[in-house]
Image (cartoon, rainbow, N blue to C red; front, side):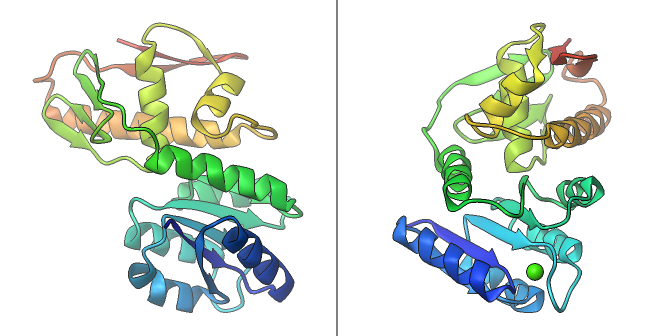
Length: 232
Ligand code: CA
């Protein structure tokens, strides 16, 4: 059974979410404070965390960063009631994979949870993709530049795999969002830009560590007004 952790101090939202998720077959741990979420994270070992950013005891972004360190392979979705886009960007930079802005509907949140978990645990692919010095091992969910393994978060890996499937081919923003995040994507594509920025850093760092032994490394080219392309 897949385990979810809900970190939410609001009793109405917390209990509604928890019972809806349980009714859909997930094991749910509900934590009402950041501190208790961090204390129980490793024991609960959730596959996905729904994290409210406005918590009574600790700063939500701090909780996000610490949860990411404790649960490197879990999907973290932040819930924010604030319209402030800065919050969203900081959340993604603090280790979240996705976000939902309150108010959200249960249908919306269940669809998003399902989409994330399907990719997380999803169909096992056996393919290996090679683009220059980059090797993406889909079965093992590992990516290498030469012999140097890249440390990637769940959605960073998916985005890299998606771009590497079609090297040299332009991919539109909406297309990438729908392929990597959700088939019914709506709203801002800021999430995409933050993930591309992180991937660029990781590609550059791995290339430098590898010292060019694996041959030329691919890079992500920005296509203004359209999207991105992986080039060699
Ligand atoms: Ca709150």
